[in-house]
Amino acid sequence: MKIITNKKSVILTILFTSSNILYTLTNLTGEVILWTSVGSKKVKGTKKVTPTTISIITKFIIKRITEFGYKYVHIKLRGFRKNKKTALKHLKTKHVNILSICDNSSLAHNGCKQPKLRRI
Image (cartoon, rainbow, N blue to C red):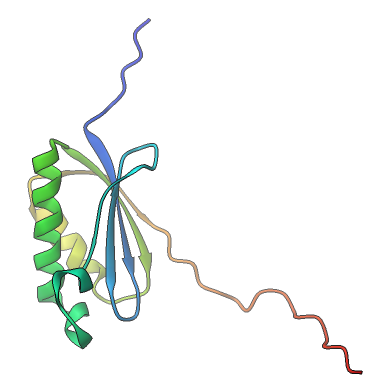
């Protein structure tokens, strides 16, 4: 019996931090193929999280995906920013088939209570 593996699909992880946006392209086993950030493209300061820079970096990522010959993309989003929809909109308009979109944003709830400090 022949096992069919899909070598034309990759995972694109987008991490939205407070001052930067990181893109990581991995294969299905988790090995990094390509990574880039808005800050690595010589954009500094508060201009890093504007919709225009997001569109520029997304076009760069899609160009690299098509150069490597991948056709299908799984998207994982992390972080809290209002520009998530902008990034998804630019990814949907290009010639890459999106198989799944997963939002892995976790909201902290203060966790466990810290132990009382010992006074000497």
